[in-house]
Length: 265
Image 1 (tube, rainbow, N blue to C red):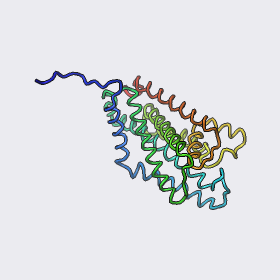
Image 2 (cartoon, rainbow, N blue to C red):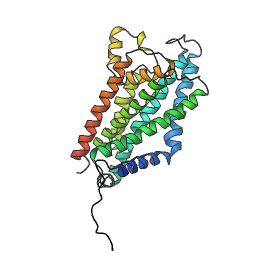
Image 3 (cartoon, rainbow, N blue to C red):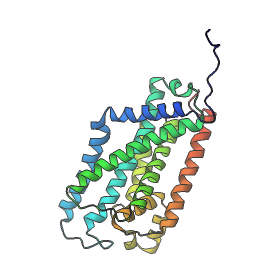
Image 4 (cartoon, rainbow, N blue to C red):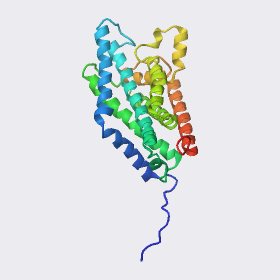
């Protein structure tokens, strides 16, 4: 006897759907690994080469370590976060332009599950790029893990934060020019002014205050502490700031998918 058809019950969380969306996001960037993983690693190594050629061995110790060891964590973090943002934002942007955004909205996935699937996909790309970039830098600069717990925490939270920012950008952008504007006028300036290339302890008091208002400062400072054991700011404040920003972005993304803002029109 053939059982009667009935709607499938997924429970409070559609784990199968969430896992499927996550795997789709990961496979999407791994399919073009030369562009999504190798290219960011090469770009970061070029940044490192420019600083080596420009400064040579003329820079003294920074934070108790040679300048290149101080610089490396910031470069790795920049590669991780920019690619986490790019993965989440491009996924939504391409779906909207190609007109297949319905394939994301129609399955039995809640707004929270869609948000987490896209964000975790971006997080994974950020981590993969970070590991690849660290491996490339390690050939030229000795890298350490002074505090592995801090290294993992700040790496994950920072990549997740930029992935969620990428989701928001992908929802509200209408074309790739808008995505480029977010990268060029928000992400890149905040990253460059966060202490990536210098210690904020060398800034005047007002400059340090501005730096400490920048959430990018805390993700780079905490990640650098995990690698070399030096931090310019409060690690506790940095952890709370990243948790708070991630929570706020999660709520914003959830509400956007719940309302279908700029997606169901």
